[in-house]
Length: 405
Ligand SMILES: Cc1ncc(COP(=O)(O)O)c(C=O)c1O
Image 1 (cartoon, helix red, strand yellow):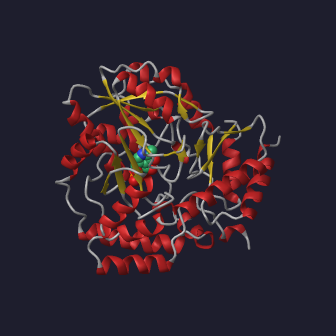
Image 2 (cartoon, rainbow, N blue to C red):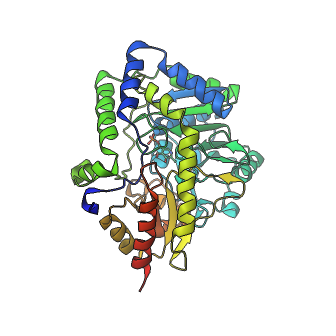
Image 3 (cartoon, helix red, strand yellow):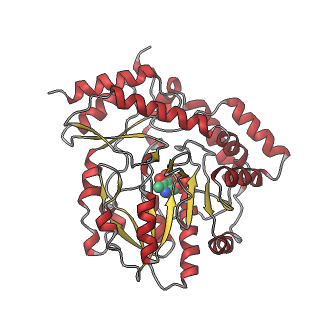
């Protein structure tokens, strides 16, 4: 088969038509779909309080609003990594708080510890660790720093469900954690997010934030159902080339936006999330196997470096990140895409390069060499269940060719 008609999507998780039919059937006959998913999630990750909401960014915004309320509005700065998903700074701004950046080390995608050490506990309300691409940050070290300064810690595991570090699931470190169930995640319900905490006090503040959230509208539920059908039908590499060749769909585009709703989780989508969640171990093991294979077959060298996982980490590998010499990255990307592989250069830039944030950042945060270096070198490779051994061997050969010369 020519690669013209086979394109491996950059992210996503296989959803079969029987998953779709069974989930819709469950939603038709049961009203307690969200409660069931809540119970499964709390039990699996071992936390006492889980609160589902409309999206991961809504979860992060509500977490910050809850912590702001507990703090009595005394501190208004939130530390985030200099390179991460744009939903992270947008959630901070939406919560009426101020973005502060701590630079990251491209070799680990984690905060530079000496920079994190300098945060001021009198002004910083919370630190958000973002476990990029499903690679857990060094949460014990970060938790120690935040504890010493009396700063709240948010373990944003939007990308890291199924990962762990030090034997503890990602998302359960810190005062509050979160997961996302959007289309690119290893457990999806098209949209969705959940906040988790073990603290009664934090859980109370979260409850106060979520109690008046509106339900999803009929239009939103219909849109979710249509998206789900399209997703289930077109994620397969034999069909993904079609939506991928329609630029107006804007697949994989990242935009900085704060106009998303804060709403309840769509109960029509909960059975799908719950069904896929029951497969988490299989999905995570398969992604780790894909990562191990990349480790053994990719043409490592001075132009292609791996990202180190932190000691004691079991990554979820939502994607497999590599660092490519900046002079070669575009060539490698184009070659992979020509061969039907959905490699990406991830987010368009570092957080301090987002135009909408320019007037909101402090002068010292406008320079973040680690984040900016990463933005020039990062390349992500797919790890989902549709990636075959043959795809991975092809990726290795195509990358070696593109990096030669
Ligand atoms: C680290 C991080 N936090 C929050 C979010 C927001 O999640 P959602 O897309 O469900 O709004 C994302 C999105 O991928 C993310 O990567």
